[in-house]
Length: 578
Image 1 (cartoon, helix red, strand yellow):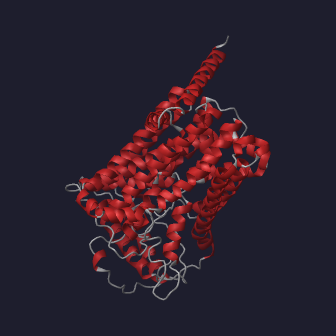
Image 2 (image 1 turned 180 degrees about the horizontal axis):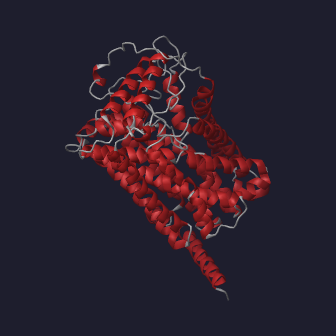
Image 3 (image 1 turned 30 degrees about the vertical axis):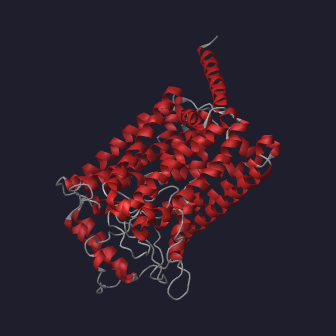
């Protein structure tokens, strides 16, 4: 018997033993049963790490800074609907045992899976850049606290001018400020990147460190079962770090949390619904609606729908693991996501970032939130902790982008997934390390958004159809009331994902393509800021903190990218980065 055959038989024997253990777990009481399932979780970790990236950080910061506790219900609902759809996908894949690129292509059409794969690769590569951008921003911020000047004072002043110009909503004023920023950056910094030598060193230092860590862990995932376990523990470490970091910020203000416990509970149960849903004149507040629908529709990205089934098969799971897969999604995807996003939102309120106005604040960035939390846990400690949490979020997302590219290229090109091929293709998004100092040209995210946000509802439709295709999965389609309820939830998830995609396509594709260019005019006096805003001025918007599937509102302090401005925009219309 060959070594390969021997290894295969050993693996098969181990899976059979695990299937018997799972069957025995079903007869145990809840606590030991739950403990047994949790010990065997894994694939959901990849989904959790992928969605807990720069976009989730930005969406949670904006939600907490704009509405306090009032939108605590949105992220749990969004992820619950995403879990329902991925649960349906796991049922199809584990019942059939087939690789979805092949089975979906045969049952639904070849062009569907090609676009599915292309959208996955585009999302994983394009949205890889802002992960490094956010990590570098956090590193530079900590460098500044240590006394290093990472951005020249002239550039900071020019950025502040852009931020103040954006508040005027005057296209001519904004264009003039952006022009002055470009000129200042070009004249005062190396290659016009906007950073000092120390800033560049901090940026590429943290980028290289994160890339090196992720290459090692991702390459292990491309190996055998031991490598998969090592990679899963790496993700557990990243997620635990994020939870602990953000948890410390909240616990440091436990007195406020106890005092506000009733309001926090109301936020989780949706007591306030969508705050300020109706404007004073009786019209619909599109700003708030767009914020909520965008959050609801963006918890799961197109690359997550491709990665998840392959991570299940990589673990060797089959029919006997279908219930375990549901537990896995609940314990390692839903729970960490809800914990992290809720801690960030609560942190915005207890840290004093939320001013009580209940108006969407799209100008605040995760880095601004970190600075606002400087004294929450001693002098600057809260700021350091929040920055470390942001770096942990990006590290996990970067690794899963690499893993999904390793899977996707092998499937799309019809190649057997060997260790060398997986590792080679997993390096595809590594070019995103340049995001530590630069942003992509505007047409890159426009093209990615057009494909990725269009494909997500289509992928949901395909999953819905396949999960109800009795000719393919037989009795696994379910029956009776439970099947009806489950399908209602899937349809609801589809509708929400469609609404979120429409909003994202409008903001990221339609508006940039058809917005009229802004005329350049000399600066004009701007209205004074509200008293609450004078101490922590907002920073200029930047595309460098976009994410693959989440609300991509985060803006990091990297090179400025001009955004097309809609001259007809109302004072409350969200920016293109919303």
